[in-house]
Image (spheres, helix red, strand yellow):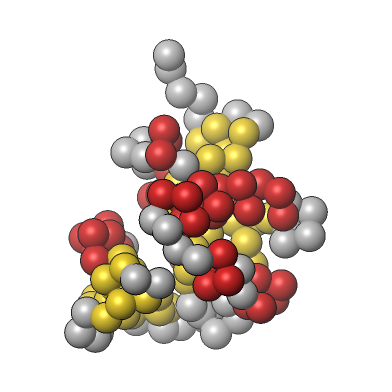
Amino acid sequence: MPMNKVTVAVAQWQKNNADIRRIRDSVFIAEQSVPPELEWDAEDAGAVHFLAYEGEYAVGTARLLPDGEIGRLSVLRDWRGLKVGEALLDAVIHEAEQRGLKPLKLSAQVQAVEFYQRFGFSVISDEFLEAGLPHVDMLREA
C-alpha cells in the first residue's frame, strides 16, 4: 500500500494534545517503558510542538523548548524507516533557526546518535541513563 506524503506542522499543546499524547504514550511509555511521570513534564506547556502527518493521521511528534533544546522526537512503529523522523527534525531545526535559537541541544538515545549526526549534531557527553535508557547529550552549533 503506497504511503501518502508526510507533512509536518507546528502543533499546539492544547489543541493537539490527544495526538501528541497518543504518539508519545505508544513510543515512550508502552514500547520503551518510560514512566509516565517522567514522560509528561512541565516543559510541554511552553514548548513548540510538531506533528508529522500521513494524510490526516498524526504519526510522529517532537518538541522544541525556548532554550533551543529538542526533545521527545518519536515516530509510531509502523511509520519508522519512512523518513518521518527526518521530516520532523528538519522542521524543528528550521523553526529553531527562525527563532534565532542556537546552539541546538538534545539528549539522544544511544541507538539514535547516527540519525542526529546526519543533521550536524555532535556527541558532547559520556553515556548516561535517562528513564532507564542509555543516552548522550548532543549539540548542533550552526
